[in-house]
Length: 46
Image (cartoon, rainbow, N blue to C red; front, top):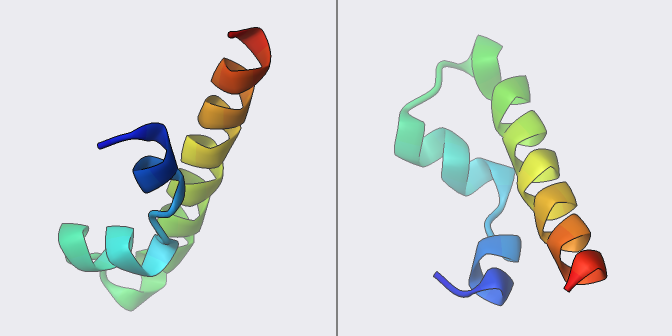
């Protein structure tokens, strides 16, 4: 995926792909935040 495509990934997509149970949905939110932070950091440095 391109960076723009990766940044467009939403936590609901992550939860669906990983088949997370409802009590673990917060993990998908953390993953989305981590992806966006990593891409932002990369773009700032390059």
